[in-house]
Image (cartoon, rainbow, N blue to C red; front, side, top):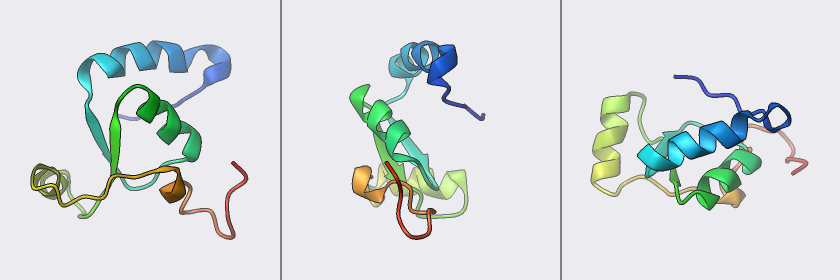
Length: 84
């Protein structure tokens, strides 16, 4: 499932209500600082993927072997830093 955050159109508000009811944690390959901060504000922990498949990442998560991400880990794909 792909989710796009568009605060100017109100998508974030409806997404945040839905996700906070059902999600405790997310595993991501990458994430921006804004999305990470909003997810954390909802009480959702975000972890960096440590494997290529969902199955492997779920196993790593259940074994507490994934790194919980902070804003310092956000925007890693931006070469030369991030403007956030």
